[in-house]
Length: 207
Image 1 (cartoon, rainbow, N blue to C red):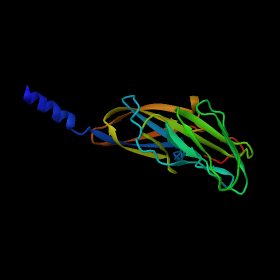
Image 2: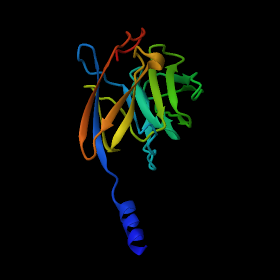
Image 3: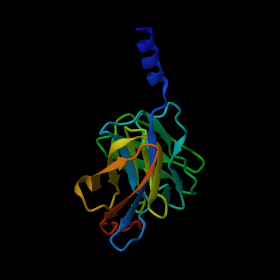
């Protein structure tokens, strides 16, 4: 019995077998798609959110929001500093988090906490060309794609993984695609995700 207890303890203490996954989101002609949000659900379940929360920010600069897409875990707080010489009125009508930050000037800031997962489109009540999105995620494996459309993840539990890809101009229900990947134990796999995008609304920046 003692030997069995020791064996079980050794198994419990052994590090979890994990692998890496690299995702590239690209158009039909092979161009990388930046500002897509990739979220992973190992074995179909959300991974634990990080205990430490960095400072999240969407700045108002040159009459634009920056970044265009921000990934925030549930419970995260986002600041909205104004670096322009004009006043802004930031708002969202999203059911995930409805809010209004009424007119405030340069060097001023406001903050909002996001406690539910989902997409939060942003606008400015003064400048219609200002558009941005916050993706509030419920899994610890979440990233925004870089300029080449890439998002990389490490230390993912080996086995099947549900992959979700969201982009504001994606031609798909709720602007989101789902696919399955298999992450090898102590290995690395690359997953290409071809997508079709709608033209961005005008006035707006390109994706």
